[in-house]
Length: 364
Image 1 (cartoon, rainbow, N blue to C red):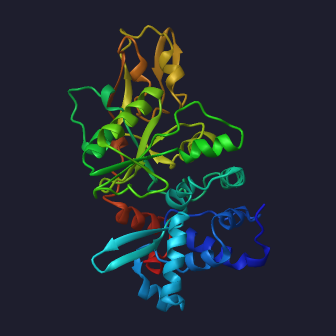
Image 2 (image 1 turned 60 degrees about the vertical axis):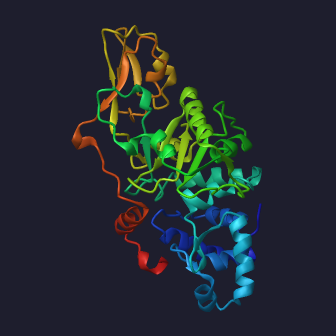
Image 3 (image 1 turned 90 degrees about the horizontal axis):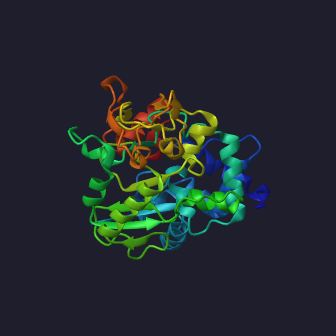
């Protein structure tokens, strides 16, 4: 296990910084969260990261504040970017550097580094934190995207609920292996769902051509990944905002950190349900049970020979795809049951900061 005894203060400082980010990073009494950071960061990297901002800034400003020569800091930034700890933005005045949240951010970016030690540390952290802060506060991080093919065709479909439109509106696309499935496999819980289904997309061309974490693919290939995920029974989800999406997770409740937290620890704020709910036409349903096997939320059961849906339904629609009688479809929820997402990540951060009573000004 990675030792943190000699440099405890650097990791403790970084942990506090990450927890001040609206996403949150729950501390664990026995220091599990610090051992996790010690695997990802060297003490020096942790010290630098703890003094970085959420909003990307230029090296000159960072160098002056941290009292680190700009040439040395630039080299540190390159290494930290390669290790998935920070992000880099290009601007007309040069590159800018910013700190990522722990999730969604640093954790997912360990896809190229993950090993059994890190997988075990993450599992220990998941179990001990029980989704605290990250999945207990509002607004939720993720929102379910329903399967388009099972929404009744006469309905007005809003573009934010359509995974295909998100992909079609981008200029470059990429795919990654699912770090959640890899993490579970490394601790002895392999999953039968496909792994290479985490989609990323960007409004800029050639965004993933030089990435060592993301494989660049075409728009057609991205749409095929989406189809493969749907056919396998995976659940589409993305950031809980109306604008500025850049990824689609294709999740399962056995591995996904968010969905498994909902199931294991009954965290109602883990994600937002889609704007739709399942409808079953009793006269068409034969009670075959295929939909029950397909549902990952235990929202369906056979009563008096007819499939019946409960309030646990999240409106993903993956069950309806396998109904041989087409008795299942998605219909709009009542307006009172629909939660309007924040406009963009900036508004999401602000609302979350207010809810958590954290001072966002210190991080921007």
